[in-house]
Image 1: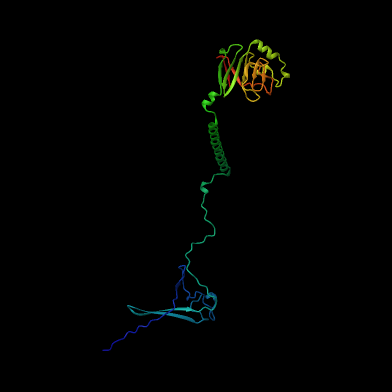
Image 2: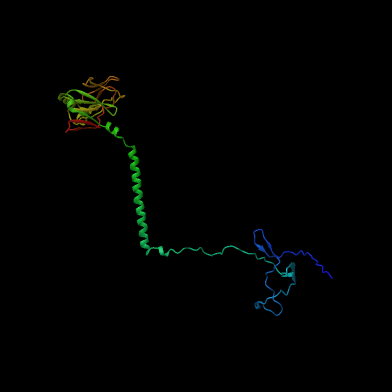
Length: 279
């Protein structure tokens, strides 16, 4: 009985398809150039077939399958000109212009109406911004205003009936002494008979006293801030013993280093209650 021997032979064939580092397959042995026209043919005949101006190259592979030996043969014509490799491309479709959505359904009926709506919105935002700014500034200034206890000390009230005629009363207002003099008629006549235009600090008695019988002044010497003594001095008014300043019965400087008269604060009379309100 004859025996059949199977001889296996390995073939090493160059690959026809390879994969680049980017993952794109490349078939370098396949020529995708158009076939050159043969003799008697035209370029517009679109005839198919191998190139007639260059010999073809062949590559084959042999493998053993269940049906026996199977051989695959690939033909790759040699190019006669420059070779251009064509790769697979998975890029998105290129569009020449951006796709803009259609907003025609949201447009105003006319440009004038659209302009009016824009002006109305701008005006409303301006009013709202001004209101917020005003509220912010008002609250900020309110924090800087004086408190209730400070406002209570800003004014001082004195009962006029408690001061007899020809006497002085000293009260404290805003940390300073205040002289209140209930003058007699002789003191009023003396103060108003003086030629005030020739004084160091010219000021009439009428300008210093709202009512002739009541004289209100700050008890602070205008020289160095001392407190003068009442019913003293050469002119029967006030005298500062620190540096020898003499004031008359109207509080005007008459002698000594003081440059100005005694200051008259802001005050008013409450006729209904008979009080003097300072401040």
